[in-house]
Image (cartoon, rainbow over all chains, first blue to last red):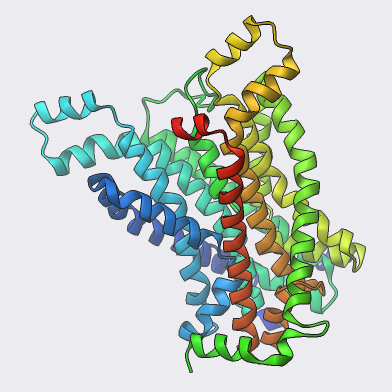
Amino acid sequence: MNWDRMFDIPSDLQHSWIGLVGLHLREALLPVLAGLVISLPLAQLCVRFRWLYPPVLWVTTVLYAIPSLAFFVLLIDYTGQTELTVMIPLTVYSLVVLVPAIVDAVRSVPQETLAAATAMGFGPVRRYVQVQLPIAVPAIIAGLRVATVSSISLVSIGALIGNQGALGNLINDANIYNRPELAVNAVLSMAALAMLADGLLVAVRMLLTPWMPRRARTTPKAGRPDSAAAALEDAAR
Amino acid sequence: MNLLHFISAFFSDGSHWQGYDGIPTRVGEHVQYTLEALAIAAAIALPVGLVTGHYGRGGNALALIATAGRALPTFGLLVLMTLLLGFGLVNVMTPLVVLAVPPILVTTYEGMRSVDPSPVDAARGMGMSEAGILFQVELPAALPLILSGLRSGAIQIVSTATIAAYVSLGGLGRYIVDGLYQRNYEKVVGGATLVALMALATLALFWAVSRVAVSPGVRRSN
Protein backbone atom coordinates (compact mmCIF):
# COMPACT_ATOMS: atom_id res chain seq x y z
CA MET A 1 0.00 0.00 0.00
CA ASN A 2 1.30 3.38 -1.03
CA TRP A 3 -0.31 5.96 1.25
CA ASP A 4 1.31 8.94 -0.53
CA ARG A 5 -0.73 8.15 -3.61
CA MET A 6 -4.06 7.86 -1.84
CA PHE A 7 -5.39 11.00 -3.51
CA ASP A 8 -3.56 10.40 -6.79
CA ILE A 9 -6.69 9.69 -8.80
CA PRO A 10 -6.07 7.73 -12.04
CA SER A 11 -6.70 9.86 -15.10
CA ASP A 12 -9.21 7.43 -16.63
CA LEU A 13 -11.79 8.68 -14.14
CA GLN A 14 -11.50 12.21 -15.62
CA HIS A 15 -12.24 13.78 -12.23
CA SER A 16 -10.37 15.10 -9.24
CA TRP A 17 -11.20 13.66 -5.83
CA ILE A 18 -13.45 16.65 -5.13
CA GLY A 19 -15.09 16.12 -8.51
CA LEU A 20 -15.79 12.49 -7.66
CA VAL A 21 -17.27 13.49 -4.31
CA GLY A 22 -19.55 16.01 -6.04
CA LEU A 23 -20.59 13.45 -8.62
CA HIS A 24 -21.22 10.91 -5.89
CA LEU A 25 -23.38 13.32 -3.90
CA ARG A 26 -25.40 14.19 -6.99
CA GLU A 27 -25.97 10.57 -7.94
CA ALA A 28 -26.91 9.64 -4.37
CA LEU A 29 -28.95 12.63 -3.23
CA LEU A 30 -31.03 13.47 -6.31
CA PRO A 31 -32.77 10.05 -6.11
CA VAL A 32 -33.53 10.58 -2.41
CA LEU A 33 -35.00 13.99 -3.23
CA ALA A 34 -37.04 12.51 -6.08
CA GLY A 35 -38.18 9.74 -3.74
CA LEU A 36 -39.34 12.31 -1.19
CA VAL A 37 -41.21 14.34 -3.82
CA ILE A 38 -43.02 11.23 -5.07
CA SER A 39 -43.63 9.62 -1.69
CA LEU A 40 -45.37 12.60 -0.06
CA PRO A 41 -48.44 12.53 -2.35
CA LEU A 42 -48.33 8.73 -2.55
CA ALA A 43 -48.35 8.45 1.25
CA GLN A 44 -51.21 10.94 1.43
CA LEU A 45 -53.19 8.79 -1.01
CA CYS A 46 -52.50 5.74 1.18
CA VAL A 47 -53.73 7.63 4.24
CA ARG A 48 -56.88 8.82 2.45
CA PHE A 49 -57.75 5.47 0.91
CA ARG A 50 -56.93 2.81 3.49
CA TRP A 51 -57.46 -0.09 1.09
CA LEU A 52 -54.61 1.25 -1.04
CA TYR A 53 -51.95 0.82 1.64
CA PRO A 54 -51.61 -3.00 1.86
CA PRO A 55 -51.06 -3.46 -1.91
CA VAL A 56 -48.64 -0.49 -2.01
CA LEU A 57 -46.74 -1.99 0.93
CA TRP A 58 -46.64 -5.35 -0.82
CA VAL A 59 -45.32 -3.90 -4.08
CA THR A 60 -42.66 -1.85 -2.29
CA THR A 61 -41.47 -4.87 -0.29
CA VAL A 62 -41.07 -6.86 -3.49
CA LEU A 63 -39.28 -4.00 -5.30
CA TYR A 64 -36.97 -3.54 -2.34
CA ALA A 65 -35.97 -7.19 -2.43
CA ILE A 66 -34.57 -6.82 -5.96
CA PRO A 67 -30.77 -6.49 -5.69
CA SER A 68 -29.38 -3.19 -6.95
CA LEU A 69 -27.01 -4.75 -9.48
CA ALA A 70 -29.86 -6.76 -11.02
CA PHE A 71 -32.00 -3.62 -11.11
CA PHE A 72 -29.20 -1.63 -12.81
CA VAL A 73 -28.50 -4.14 -15.54
CA LEU A 74 -32.18 -4.71 -16.32
CA LEU A 75 -32.49 -0.96 -16.91
CA ILE A 76 -29.47 -0.78 -19.24
CA ASP A 77 -31.67 -1.87 -22.14
CA TYR A 78 -33.84 1.22 -21.66
CA THR A 79 -31.60 3.95 -20.30
CA GLY A 80 -28.14 2.78 -21.38
CA GLN A 81 -24.99 2.83 -19.23
CA THR A 82 -25.79 6.26 -17.85
CA GLU A 83 -26.22 7.98 -14.52
CA LEU A 84 -29.97 7.66 -14.95
CA THR A 85 -29.67 3.87 -14.80
CA VAL A 86 -28.16 4.20 -11.34
CA MET A 87 -30.52 6.92 -10.18
CA ILE A 88 -33.82 5.22 -11.06
CA PRO A 89 -33.35 2.19 -8.76
CA LEU A 90 -32.06 4.43 -5.98
CA THR A 91 -35.22 6.54 -6.33
CA VAL A 92 -37.32 3.40 -6.03
CA TYR A 93 -35.42 2.26 -2.94
CA SER A 94 -35.85 5.69 -1.31
CA LEU A 95 -39.55 5.55 -2.12
CA VAL A 96 -39.84 2.15 -0.48
CA VAL A 97 -38.28 3.42 2.74
CA LEU A 98 -40.13 6.73 2.80
CA VAL A 99 -43.72 5.75 1.97
CA PRO A 100 -44.32 3.46 5.00
CA ALA A 101 -42.48 5.89 7.28
CA ILE A 102 -44.64 8.83 6.19
CA VAL A 103 -47.90 6.86 6.20
CA ASP A 104 -47.31 5.57 9.73
CA ALA A 105 -46.31 9.02 10.93
CA VAL A 106 -49.30 10.84 9.41
CA ARG A 107 -51.64 8.14 10.71
CA SER A 108 -50.24 8.38 14.21
CA VAL A 109 -51.36 12.02 14.57
CA PRO A 110 -53.97 11.83 17.37
CA GLN A 111 -57.60 12.21 16.39
CA GLU A 112 -58.07 14.97 18.98
CA THR A 113 -55.31 17.04 17.40
CA LEU A 114 -57.00 16.78 14.01
CA ALA A 115 -60.38 17.59 15.53
CA ALA A 116 -58.88 20.63 17.27
CA ALA A 117 -57.39 21.84 13.98
CA THR A 118 -60.74 21.38 12.22
CA ALA A 119 -62.52 23.22 15.02
CA MET A 120 -60.06 26.10 14.63
CA GLY A 121 -61.24 26.39 11.03
CA PHE A 122 -58.35 24.64 9.26
CA GLY A 123 -59.27 23.27 5.85
CA PRO A 124 -57.94 19.86 4.77
CA VAL A 125 -54.93 21.32 2.92
CA ARG A 126 -53.90 23.70 5.69
CA ARG A 127 -54.47 20.97 8.26
CA TYR A 128 -52.15 18.70 6.29
CA VAL A 129 -49.41 21.27 5.78
CA GLN A 130 -49.50 22.93 9.19
CA VAL A 131 -50.52 20.08 11.52
CA GLN A 132 -49.99 16.61 10.09
CA LEU A 133 -46.77 17.23 8.21
CA PRO A 134 -44.86 18.94 11.06
CA ILE A 135 -45.86 16.16 13.46
CA ALA A 136 -44.65 13.63 10.89
CA VAL A 137 -41.27 15.38 10.48
CA PRO A 138 -39.30 13.14 12.90
CA ALA A 139 -40.50 10.00 11.12
CA ILE A 140 -39.86 11.50 7.67
CA ILE A 141 -36.33 12.48 8.71
CA ALA A 142 -35.76 9.00 10.14
CA GLY A 143 -36.77 7.57 6.76
CA LEU A 144 -34.60 10.10 4.91
CA ARG A 145 -31.60 9.13 7.05
CA VAL A 146 -31.91 5.47 6.12
CA ALA A 147 -32.56 6.28 2.46
CA THR A 148 -29.65 8.75 2.21
CA VAL A 149 -27.07 6.57 3.94
CA SER A 150 -27.89 3.47 1.92
CA SER A 151 -28.13 5.52 -1.28
CA ILE A 152 -24.60 6.86 -0.77
CA SER A 153 -23.32 3.33 -0.30
CA LEU A 154 -25.30 1.89 -3.24
CA VAL A 155 -24.07 4.42 -5.83
CA SER A 156 -20.70 2.67 -5.77
CA ILE A 157 -22.24 -0.46 -7.29
CA GLY A 158 -22.83 1.64 -10.40
CA ALA A 159 -19.12 1.08 -11.09
CA LEU A 160 -20.01 -2.46 -12.14
CA ILE A 161 -22.19 -1.30 -15.03
CA GLY A 162 -19.46 0.78 -16.63
CA ASN A 163 -18.01 3.71 -14.74
CA GLN A 164 -21.24 5.06 -13.28
CA GLY A 165 -20.27 4.67 -9.65
CA ALA A 166 -18.53 8.01 -8.86
CA LEU A 167 -16.37 7.09 -5.84
CA GLY A 168 -17.18 3.46 -6.65
CA ASN A 169 -15.11 3.82 -9.82
CA LEU A 170 -12.17 4.41 -7.53
CA ILE A 171 -12.75 0.96 -6.06
CA ASN A 172 -12.80 -0.49 -9.55
CA ASP A 173 -9.53 1.29 -10.35
CA ALA A 174 -8.03 0.07 -7.07
CA ASN A 175 -8.75 -3.43 -8.28
CA ILE A 176 -7.51 -3.12 -11.87
CA TYR A 177 -4.38 -1.10 -11.03
CA ASN A 178 -3.80 -3.08 -7.79
CA ARG A 179 -3.72 0.08 -5.69
CA PRO A 180 -5.50 -0.75 -2.41
CA GLU A 181 -5.00 2.80 -1.13
CA LEU A 182 -7.59 3.97 -3.67
CA ALA A 183 -10.13 1.51 -2.22
CA VAL A 184 -9.30 2.77 1.27
CA ASN A 185 -9.84 6.31 0.04
CA ALA A 186 -13.20 5.38 -1.54
CA VAL A 187 -14.49 3.44 1.47
CA LEU A 188 -13.48 6.15 3.94
CA SER A 189 -14.81 8.96 1.72
CA MET A 190 -18.16 7.23 1.30
CA ALA A 191 -18.46 6.42 5.00
CA ALA A 192 -17.58 10.03 5.84
CA LEU A 193 -20.15 11.37 3.34
CA ALA A 194 -22.79 9.05 4.79
CA MET A 195 -22.05 10.09 8.37
CA LEU A 196 -22.01 13.75 7.35
CA ALA A 197 -25.36 13.51 5.56
CA ASP A 198 -26.78 11.62 8.53
CA GLY A 199 -25.59 14.31 10.94
CA LEU A 200 -26.99 17.07 8.73
CA LEU A 201 -30.40 15.39 8.67
CA VAL A 202 -30.37 15.14 12.47
CA ALA A 203 -29.57 18.85 12.61
CA VAL A 204 -32.43 19.60 10.20
CA ARG A 205 -34.79 17.62 12.40
CA MET A 206 -33.74 19.63 15.44
CA LEU A 207 -34.34 22.87 13.52
CA LEU A 208 -37.75 21.76 12.24
CA THR A 209 -39.01 20.30 15.50
CA PRO A 210 -38.03 22.74 18.25
CA TRP A 211 -40.68 21.19 20.54
CA MET A 212 -38.87 17.85 20.67
CA PRO A 213 -36.48 17.15 23.57
CA ARG A 214 -32.92 18.06 22.60
CA ARG A 215 -31.48 14.73 23.61
CA ALA A 216 -33.90 12.81 21.47
CA ARG A 217 -32.70 9.30 22.13
CA THR A 218 -35.22 6.81 20.92
CA THR A 219 -35.54 4.86 24.15
CA PRO A 220 -38.86 3.11 23.74
CA LYS A 221 -41.14 3.61 26.68
CA ALA A 222 -42.17 0.40 28.37
CA GLY A 223 -45.31 -1.05 26.88
CA ARG A 224 -45.30 1.16 23.83
CA PRO A 225 -43.74 -0.82 21.00
CA ASP A 226 -41.26 1.26 19.10
CA SER A 227 -41.62 -0.78 15.99
CA ALA A 228 -40.80 2.19 13.75
CA ALA A 229 -37.07 1.80 14.28
CA ALA A 230 -37.29 -1.91 13.65
CA ALA A 231 -39.38 -1.38 10.54
CA LEU A 232 -36.81 1.09 9.20
CA GLU A 233 -34.03 -1.34 9.97
CA ASP A 234 -35.96 -3.98 8.13
CA ALA A 235 -36.03 -1.70 5.12
CA ALA A 236 -32.33 -0.86 5.16
CA ARG A 237 -29.90 -2.76 3.09
CA MET B 1 -35.16 -7.01 -28.99
CA ASN B 2 -36.68 -6.30 -25.64
CA LEU B 3 -36.01 -7.52 -22.14
CA LEU B 4 -38.36 -10.50 -22.32
CA HIS B 5 -36.71 -11.60 -25.53
CA PHE B 6 -33.28 -11.62 -23.86
CA ILE B 7 -34.67 -13.49 -20.86
CA SER B 8 -36.30 -16.20 -22.94
CA ALA B 9 -33.16 -16.51 -25.10
CA PHE B 10 -31.03 -17.03 -22.01
CA PHE B 11 -33.24 -19.62 -20.38
CA SER B 12 -34.01 -21.58 -23.54
CA ASP B 13 -30.31 -22.03 -24.39
CA GLY B 14 -29.50 -25.60 -23.36
CA SER B 15 -25.82 -24.81 -22.72
CA HIS B 16 -26.84 -22.55 -19.83
CA TRP B 17 -28.24 -25.51 -17.93
CA GLN B 18 -25.15 -27.67 -17.47
CA GLY B 19 -21.49 -27.61 -16.51
CA TYR B 20 -19.59 -25.48 -14.04
CA ASP B 21 -21.15 -22.30 -15.44
CA GLY B 22 -24.62 -23.82 -15.63
CA ILE B 23 -27.64 -22.38 -13.88
CA PRO B 24 -27.97 -25.25 -11.34
CA THR B 25 -24.30 -24.90 -10.29
CA ARG B 26 -24.46 -21.12 -9.97
CA VAL B 27 -27.75 -21.19 -8.08
CA GLY B 28 -26.27 -23.83 -5.76
CA GLU B 29 -23.20 -21.67 -5.10
CA HIS B 30 -25.34 -18.63 -4.42
CA VAL B 31 -27.55 -20.55 -2.00
CA GLN B 32 -24.46 -21.94 -0.28
CA TYR B 33 -22.88 -18.48 0.24
CA THR B 34 -26.17 -17.09 1.48
CA LEU B 35 -26.81 -19.90 3.97
CA GLU B 36 -23.25 -19.86 5.32
CA ALA B 37 -23.14 -16.09 5.78
CA LEU B 38 -26.64 -15.97 7.25
CA ALA B 39 -25.85 -18.80 9.69
CA ILE B 40 -22.68 -17.05 10.91
CA ALA B 41 -24.42 -13.66 11.16
CA ALA B 42 -27.37 -15.15 13.04
CA ALA B 43 -25.05 -17.05 15.39
CA ILE B 44 -23.41 -13.72 16.28
CA ALA B 45 -26.38 -11.36 16.28
CA LEU B 46 -29.26 -13.42 17.67
CA PRO B 47 -27.79 -14.23 21.11
CA VAL B 48 -26.52 -10.66 21.57
CA GLY B 49 -29.84 -9.18 20.46
CA LEU B 50 -31.89 -11.53 22.65
CA VAL B 51 -29.85 -10.89 25.78
CA THR B 52 -29.54 -7.10 25.34
CA GLY B 53 -33.25 -6.92 24.46
CA HIS B 54 -34.20 -9.00 27.49
CA TYR B 55 -32.32 -6.74 29.87
CA GLY B 56 -33.04 -3.59 27.88
CA ARG B 57 -29.47 -2.39 27.87
CA GLY B 58 -27.20 -1.19 25.11
CA GLY B 59 -29.84 0.09 22.69
CA ASN B 60 -27.82 3.20 21.83
CA ALA B 61 -24.70 1.18 21.13
CA LEU B 62 -26.70 -1.10 18.82
CA ALA B 63 -28.16 1.90 16.97
CA LEU B 64 -24.63 3.20 16.45
CA ILE B 65 -23.47 -0.17 15.10
CA ALA B 66 -26.44 -0.23 12.73
CA THR B 67 -25.68 3.24 11.33
CA ALA B 68 -22.01 2.40 10.93
CA GLY B 69 -22.91 -0.87 9.20
CA ARG B 70 -25.13 0.97 6.75
CA ALA B 71 -22.58 3.69 6.08
CA LEU B 72 -19.82 1.26 5.08
CA PRO B 73 -20.09 0.63 1.36
CA THR B 74 -20.49 -3.05 0.65
CA PHE B 75 -18.72 -3.06 -2.66
CA GLY B 76 -15.72 -1.16 -1.33
CA LEU B 77 -15.38 -3.47 1.64
CA LEU B 78 -15.45 -6.53 -0.60
CA VAL B 79 -12.79 -5.25 -2.95
CA LEU B 80 -10.61 -3.94 -0.14
CA MET B 81 -10.68 -7.25 1.74
CA THR B 82 -9.72 -9.10 -1.42
CA LEU B 83 -6.95 -6.65 -2.33
CA LEU B 84 -5.43 -6.74 1.12
CA LEU B 85 -5.89 -10.39 2.08
CA GLY B 86 -5.96 -12.07 -1.28
CA PHE B 87 -8.54 -14.19 -3.02
CA GLY B 88 -10.56 -16.56 -0.89
CA LEU B 89 -13.97 -17.49 0.41
CA VAL B 90 -13.27 -16.25 3.95
CA ASN B 91 -12.38 -12.78 2.67
CA VAL B 92 -15.69 -12.62 0.86
CA MET B 93 -17.67 -14.17 3.71
CA THR B 94 -16.48 -11.51 6.18
CA PRO B 95 -18.14 -8.49 4.49
CA LEU B 96 -21.30 -10.54 3.95
CA VAL B 97 -21.47 -11.36 7.66
CA VAL B 98 -20.62 -7.78 8.63
CA LEU B 99 -23.52 -6.62 6.46
CA ALA B 100 -26.11 -9.01 7.82
CA VAL B 101 -25.30 -8.58 11.51
CA PRO B 102 -26.73 -5.03 12.06
CA PRO B 103 -30.29 -5.67 10.77
CA ILE B 104 -30.58 -8.94 12.71
CA LEU B 105 -29.13 -7.37 15.85
CA VAL B 106 -31.30 -4.27 15.82
CA THR B 107 -34.60 -5.94 14.94
CA THR B 108 -34.02 -8.64 17.55
CA TYR B 109 -33.33 -6.00 20.17
CA GLU B 110 -36.33 -3.90 19.14
CA GLY B 111 -38.52 -7.00 18.92
CA MET B 112 -37.61 -8.04 22.46
CA ARG B 113 -38.14 -4.48 23.73
CA SER B 114 -41.56 -4.19 22.13
CA VAL B 115 -42.96 -7.28 23.87
CA ASP B 116 -45.94 -6.35 26.04
CA PRO B 117 -44.50 -6.16 29.59
CA SER B 118 -47.61 -7.50 31.36
CA PRO B 119 -47.26 -11.15 30.27
CA VAL B 120 -43.56 -10.93 31.12
CA ASP B 121 -44.44 -9.67 34.62
CA ALA B 122 -47.09 -12.38 34.94
CA ALA B 123 -44.54 -15.04 33.97
CA ARG B 124 -42.08 -13.67 36.49
CA GLY B 125 -44.81 -13.63 39.13
CA MET B 126 -45.58 -17.27 38.40
CA GLY B 127 -41.97 -18.07 39.22
CA MET B 128 -40.57 -18.67 35.74
CA SER B 129 -36.79 -18.49 35.47
CA GLU B 130 -35.22 -15.66 33.43
CA ALA B 131 -34.27 -18.14 30.72
CA GLY B 132 -37.80 -19.50 30.73
CA ILE B 133 -39.21 -15.98 30.33
CA LEU B 134 -36.78 -15.25 27.51
CA PHE B 135 -37.47 -18.40 25.50
CA GLN B 136 -41.11 -19.17 26.35
CA VAL B 137 -42.67 -15.72 26.69
CA GLU B 138 -40.59 -13.02 25.02
CA LEU B 139 -39.16 -14.97 22.09
CA PRO B 140 -42.51 -16.19 20.70
CA ALA B 141 -43.97 -12.70 21.01
CA ALA B 142 -40.95 -11.07 19.37
CA LEU B 143 -40.67 -13.70 16.65
CA PRO B 144 -42.37 -11.69 13.85
CA LEU B 145 -39.86 -8.85 14.20
CA ILE B 146 -36.91 -11.21 14.65
CA LEU B 147 -37.90 -13.03 11.48
CA SER B 148 -38.19 -9.74 9.60
CA GLY B 149 -34.64 -8.93 10.72
CA LEU B 150 -33.39 -12.30 9.50
CA ARG B 151 -35.24 -11.76 6.23
CA SER B 152 -33.67 -8.36 5.80
CA GLY B 153 -30.22 -9.83 6.48
CA ALA B 154 -30.83 -12.73 4.10
CA ILE B 155 -31.91 -10.41 1.29
CA GLN B 156 -28.89 -8.21 1.85
CA ILE B 157 -26.65 -11.24 1.58
CA VAL B 158 -28.37 -12.43 -1.59
CA SER B 159 -27.82 -9.00 -3.18
CA THR B 160 -24.25 -8.67 -2.01
CA ALA B 161 -23.21 -12.19 -2.94
CA THR B 162 -24.01 -11.03 -6.49
CA ILE B 163 -21.39 -8.29 -6.23
CA ALA B 164 -18.93 -10.89 -4.91
CA ALA B 165 -18.61 -12.20 -8.48
CA TYR B 166 -16.59 -9.06 -9.18
CA VAL B 167 -13.85 -10.40 -6.90
CA SER B 168 -13.83 -13.72 -8.75
CA LEU B 169 -16.29 -15.63 -6.64
CA GLY B 170 -18.96 -17.88 -8.18
CA GLY B 171 -22.65 -17.45 -7.71
CA LEU B 172 -25.25 -15.76 -9.87
CA GLY B 173 -23.29 -12.52 -10.11
CA ARG B 174 -20.89 -14.40 -12.43
CA TYR B 175 -23.42 -14.10 -15.26
CA ILE B 176 -23.82 -10.35 -14.75
CA VAL B 177 -20.12 -9.53 -14.40
CA ASP B 178 -18.96 -11.88 -17.16
CA GLY B 179 -21.83 -10.87 -19.42
CA LEU B 180 -20.97 -7.19 -19.08
CA TYR B 181 -17.32 -7.84 -19.96
CA GLN B 182 -18.23 -10.13 -22.85
CA ARG B 183 -20.84 -7.65 -24.10
CA ASN B 184 -23.30 -10.53 -23.86
CA TYR B 185 -26.42 -8.74 -22.75
CA GLU B 186 -28.49 -11.90 -22.89
CA LYS B 187 -26.32 -13.40 -20.16
CA VAL B 188 -26.44 -10.21 -18.09
CA VAL B 189 -30.21 -10.08 -18.18
CA GLY B 190 -30.52 -13.80 -17.48
CA GLY B 191 -28.28 -13.45 -14.42
CA ALA B 192 -30.14 -10.41 -13.18
CA THR B 193 -33.45 -12.23 -13.57
CA LEU B 194 -32.13 -15.19 -11.59
CA VAL B 195 -30.86 -12.93 -8.80
CA ALA B 196 -34.15 -11.07 -8.62
CA LEU B 197 -36.06 -14.36 -8.56
CA MET B 198 -33.81 -15.63 -5.80
CA ALA B 199 -34.39 -12.51 -3.70
CA LEU B 200 -38.14 -12.90 -4.19
CA ALA B 201 -37.88 -16.59 -3.28
CA THR B 202 -36.12 -15.56 -0.06
CA LEU B 203 -38.98 -13.17 0.65
CA ALA B 204 -41.52 -15.93 0.01
CA LEU B 205 -39.57 -18.41 2.14
CA PHE B 206 -39.54 -16.09 5.13
CA TRP B 207 -43.22 -15.35 4.67
CA ALA B 208 -43.93 -19.10 4.73
CA VAL B 209 -41.70 -19.62 7.77
CA SER B 210 -43.47 -16.84 9.64
CA ARG B 211 -46.84 -18.44 8.78
CA VAL B 212 -45.69 -21.69 10.33
CA ALA B 213 -43.50 -20.52 13.21
CA VAL B 214 -45.39 -17.52 14.60
CA SER B 215 -48.08 -18.55 17.03
CA PRO B 216 -51.63 -17.67 15.86
CA GLY B 217 -52.25 -15.52 18.91
CA VAL B 218 -49.26 -13.33 18.20
CA ARG B 219 -50.16 -13.08 14.54
CA ARG B 220 -53.70 -11.97 15.28
CA SER B 221 -52.64 -9.17 17.60
CA ASN B 222 -50.40 -7.68 14.95
